[in-house]
Image (cartoon, rainbow, N blue to C red):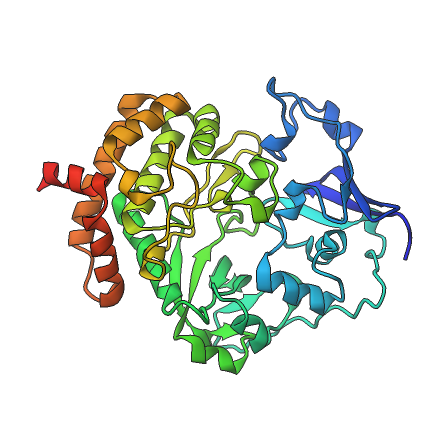
Length: 414
């Protein structure tokens, strides 16, 4: 294996930089001079912008791992381990892993071998997996690395496996049933539908029978009846790419730090600065909705920015709304809200303090909170029977009856 390997980093098809593997298993990212001097350049990430809006050019090599922005492009957990094994690389050797997966990444990025040369090799690397060919009656086909899953990969993913797929008119993200949490796809499908009814911006979603997904091992059906699918908002209907980044990338933290390194105030400050009143109203609406359904997993990677014009950031459509209190009733918020992660601390007064600390317009913030609770009350009351199983509905009802914000504002609209 060479002591020096290079990957081209392309944004919207344009070469903007390189990832270089240095001796000692270090990795260095550098922008091209052409991109650096281009005043009209497309945005890669807010994490590469200083306080004055200038591009940050100085970077230090990272050891073994990719720099945080690029590390967050890779899958986590069981899927990473599975794909790494299929590619014959170690999961922690992220340079080699991204060279295998770099043509199907989130956003408008492609990371490919330098100038079309052969892909980097690691000792004992195996051949790439054979692409999956779906049957005519299937509607979705996996796209990431062209792998066909084994049951062990699905079974070992306690939270359900998340996989890119193509079919039914576009690109999708598919979430398979969980070996630990029953009816997880059905839970997320219901909560996303409820979010839409409350006024949250939500992409097209579907609940897909497992037999209609190509490449699944037969034993997967023992875990549930459906997979949850959400249309990718980083892909156009014509197959083009739209750039996005999640807030772990914005703040320059590794995926495993998604619960620790920032708060909802930090996210709100960025949204307010980049997307103004429209963005912050949508942020507050989603935050309140997540609190109402007991979604304790709204960490940094579950909030994203989208660059529809290539340069200006807006809050990306919502995703990953799950009522986690159905499974973990004693769970807390994923990130700190003002000074607490506890649901009993969530009040209208706490949102007022939140607005002050994050320098948000107080009236806009509080009006959005009140409106969201009102809309939720109506949507929850009219939620179709059977949209969510009785056990989950009862868990959410118990949660609401212990949530001060709900009890305080519900009475105003009773």
